[in-house]
Image 1 (cartoon, helix red, strand yellow):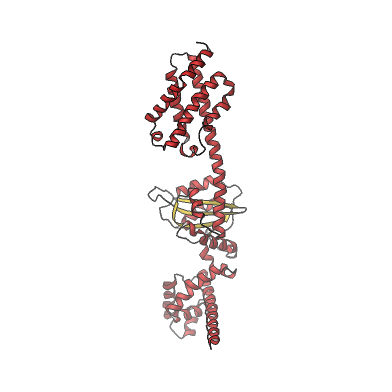
Image 2: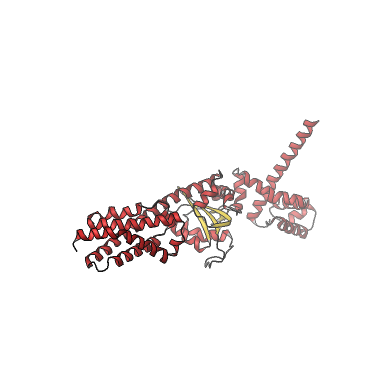
Length: 400
């Protein structure tokens, strides 16, 4: 049979090949039979286009790239999101198998042509999916940068949850923000691999010399993580991620309940990062709340409120003796004897009251760093109380 006769014969049986191919897809591929009718029809169009395109290519093999690409033009763009590359190759294999069965006995030349063409289609499919993945990756990177910027600025809106979902965020529950410097050579994929091992998900924002990671616990708490156990403290997770940052300070914001609340953690982390250099012995990473005195001196309103609400108010509400003893102890250079003489009590009484201070607020006044935190809180609390008293006095005068 010459080539023209073979072409005519192929055109006559192309309908039968298409029907047989669709039947084989239904019987052999569970994912195809479970598809909605619209998508199943689109997959069928791809198979039929492949058969038609092969006949045209057989007539003129020099048009291989254009004809092969036309196969996938028969399917809508969203089909790439519902059919994987592996499934597409299964589709190609079944179509080739059915076509070979139908043309069996028509000569080795036709069979070799089918094999050659199927190879071109497979390469084209890989190229189509690679281009789609590249476009998706660029889109995801832009969207991720937008989400991180929204978290840092605190300008959240109703679209933030949908943007987070579009990124495929796998985190759930608690979140913390980590701020440091960008290394000269930064590998985003390496950070994501490390995060997966740690059982967390990350959003990554590179803003010039500043690197921001929004860290959230992963959804699957039953996974076998070698580096850290599920529910591990964020400071330990930050320590594991520390090598991926550049030199300089690394600040971890406080833990918040969910990703939509991450702006609170981000504000504290950014404020801490701005003043971290003022604490010469700051660890790496350092928690933003350990930089409360420096942040307060720099004018951070949240730090001032935190010091007053966490330290001064609880002590004031518990006992005025604790506040008086703490003031005296800090003013006397953390000397038990000098404090006891000023208060006319035994040094053991001072020691007991200081222990009560630690029990009430969680900070130990006998340490130099925590003494600075407590003294800053006392000063801010005293200023706040004086301002409150003046406002009440002015209000009474206005009423009278």
